[in-house]
Image 1: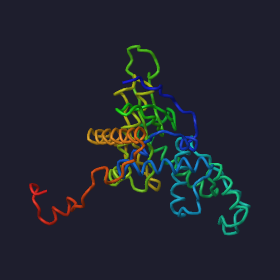
Image 2: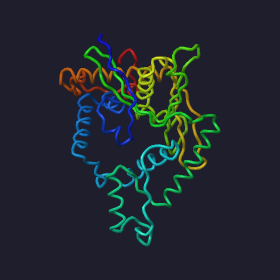
Image 3: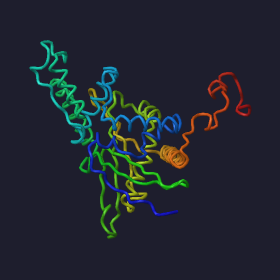
Image 4: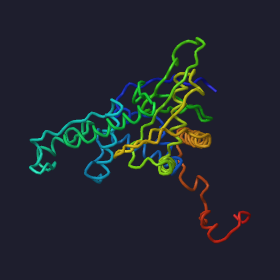
Length: 314
């Protein structure tokens, strides 16, 4: 197998990062959850939108979803000290009841959204600042010092039988030691923190969320990216999720370890998705459901058990 192209750190903002080419954990989730055809369509639509210098149409996005997305981005930026820029809407632009309903306020919001910034009322920003202060205190009290690098973006290549696949990722926060130094007898290592702002950080709820949103795939891809960039970190990188509640008492799940099964499932899914992407690039064919072997409809396992079928009859 030929030597892979060099890996590199990408110096970019989160908005610039999402405009870059390359296979990612987000696309891998679509490959695994749906198909390579769906992942290709998602990548094509994103490329078309950015080529036309268009931003997502906020008018088509439900207000509650926009609020959740903005809130998550603001909390990340305040806690990690980096991320999307926040712009306070001048109070004199707001309506007398404080609503963003005047012509001037709407123009301000549209201008800054198009520039990739998050417009917010000062009163709402103060709420997020209180949340960020409380969450930072909780994280520190649990013994986690975020003194590394936030929003670290890496481009690396994964080998496959169809040729190398260019991949990219952006990690919330990375703490590394002795990763770049020549061998000196010291043991290098790295710790990746993934910050998840949630309404409910109960472990059972977080485990369901992790499975539904494919967190295991990211947990497999990110250490591989670091090892590709710094070979000394191969097998010496840990990933920890910080599930933090955004309401009092701002509880956190201090942070869960990724079990062997969790890591193994993530690794299998990531590599399976990379191979599917490589085949797509090599052949130009984007398999959908039939090509993946789904050629009949059957009863799900829970239905068979409900109807009294024995395991030997499945």
